[in-house]
Length: 394
Image 1: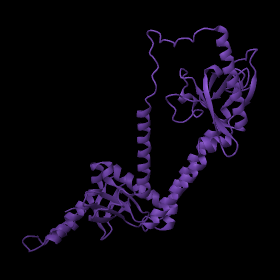
Image 2: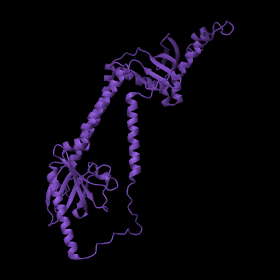
Image 3: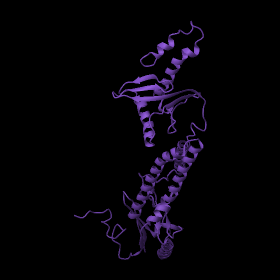
Image 4: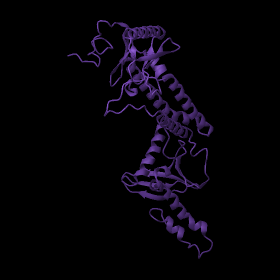
């Protein structure tokens, strides 16, 4: 049993129905895969862009004092994501080139496009106001067709075989055509012939030009797309993505504008077989807390992220993690071994306090010694009681 492909029903390739007797095909072709990859999806330019981003990520990290090997290892993940993105674009370009078919007859231009939803667009010469050619260095090119103002072409269904940013008056494009100059000359000749035939027919009929068609009652008149608001919204999205990418790559949110640290502690986390986690002050081995099994989900999830990063770089788990509070209220959890750092406030005050309380516990233990002035103001056994607590609390 043979499988039916999406275009097997066409009586002629690229044409949804049989041609009339007075119509004949003058040229037929497809989009060039190489041209679609380079000129439509700009895969080569994107590859250079990703390479520059990765290089900037490594350079800024090294300038900040991080080890070159560490930054190269962290950049490997970005390189893998970039390679996946470029691979997906290349695959989609292959599908686009395979699905397209352009046909020029002595009556019209027929465009078949669409990967998931095949669409066929018929453009009679009488409904075409003009065409333009854009050539590429390899000899291929794009021919943009300007339909008459009354014609409506779907930008979404015909993408990417349309001219970018032309939402108000969509212009279909014969994209990625080999020997585009020859095809453009053929199309120009057919448009001239159609224009001459139209004038001769108008003279023979000797009738006034038809009045503009009125909108039937009960039907809404077509309104153009709101170009300015759509362009503004698209610009906002692009600027947001660029800003987020810059902050992620440079860590400018915390490094370029550092705040003074007012409290700091080095922590170690020890897992036990029963599922509990012991939190230890790495400076003196004091137990700050014992997390019961199944509790403190955010804390466990955050630490698993740091531990996975260490394992990816073959770094042991013995080195402590650093928790800092700044004068501006930031609560920073960092791993000096991998140079990763997060601001816990971004996850909400409740989740931030899951870590912040360790600073409070440490301060409460140290406070009696720091404030001790006389035997009466600071009982001699206050610190001993705190250190002898099962959980390290006063």
